[in-house]
Image (spheres, rainbow, N blue to C red):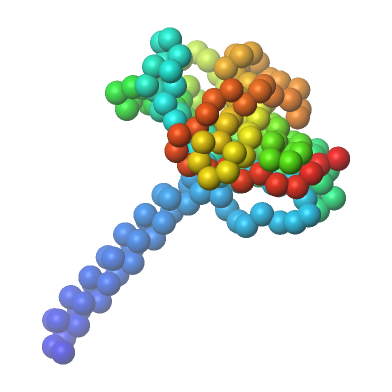
Length: 185
């Protein structure tokens, strides 16, 4: 192999490796970070769908959650993160925010998770500051696909909710999947 051919091959491999690492990093942003541990509780996954509500029809939403309790199941010692993305029907940005989990209560295949928003915001609602607000999610693991989720601000707006509190899982997802397991308390 000539020096020029070897240089071109190495450059091509380096470019492919870099692109693969960039793609993996982007995909990992919405993926659960690790396999659930036992015997504590866990909620892992990313799921969503399109809203059908007046004023938000066909807006795609996605909720990514990676929450775990320690092995003793103490809900107030839960750790993890969440991300919420919401786009307009035409694909434009509506909201994108992330936060840290501060509670996870699980029983069977249903869990309530709360967390505090640390970054991002709601670009479609200027003047609404969500940083530092505690939000809640209730997730019902219905098997592969078609899980259900509820989120506190759909009912109560962006006022902080009490730790470990949310609403019923009113929204059936059409994409993605959640896994819920363990029992808290």
